[in-house]
Structure formats: structure tokens, C-alpha cells
Image (tube, rainbow, N blue to C red):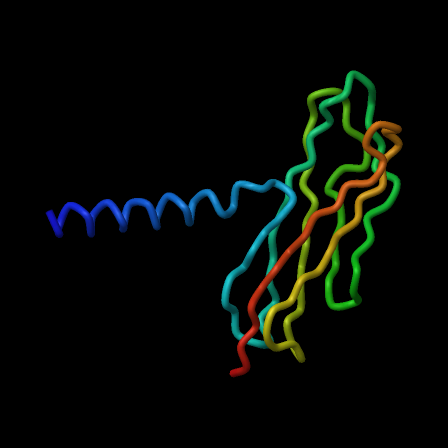
Length: 121
């Protein structure tokens, strides 16, 4: 019975870890070493019936850079929003935000978040 309980616990921990990254607007890099350049690509899909134009991509800090691969998306099309975070000079829990402004009146502002726990070398 103990082996079964232990196996069940391990499966639940693995599954919960997989679900942790299910939010398409959030990416957690976990524990990283200070000085690393962290990279992630979010996917932005035009789910409207009209052409979507990305007007601006901005970040909450100069340590984070971001850009959209495509600025105009036809209905159903997708693009990636590339994010790079320079962790040099940081330690502890860090959260940075990428703001995407579009011409879609129903969804003009999209917010993507990256997180990391930076440890000194």
C-alpha cells in the first residue's frame, strides 16, 4: 500500500507541474543563475473575424526586450511574441511584464508575464 501511495503522489506532482505552465499569458523560468539571458516565445492568435494589427509591444523594464514576429494577422493566423530577460544584477523572485497593444476594440491590451527566481552565482 505504501508503494502505491508513493507512486500516486509522484504522478500527482508530475501532473501538477505540467499544469503549472498551462496559462498562455504566463511563463515561469523557475530557478536560474544570475547573469543568464532567458528567452521565451508566447503565441498570439487572431481569434477575431477581422484583420488584427499589433500597434505596439512594450515591456515593464529595460532588462526585458520583446517583439512580435508579425504585426498584422489575418483571422485565424498566429505570431510569436519573443521575450528576452537579462537577469544580470537581479536576485530573488522577479516578475516582468510585456504589454501588447492591438487595434481590436474587444481586446486592445494583452499582458504577458515572465517570472524567475534568480540566484547569485
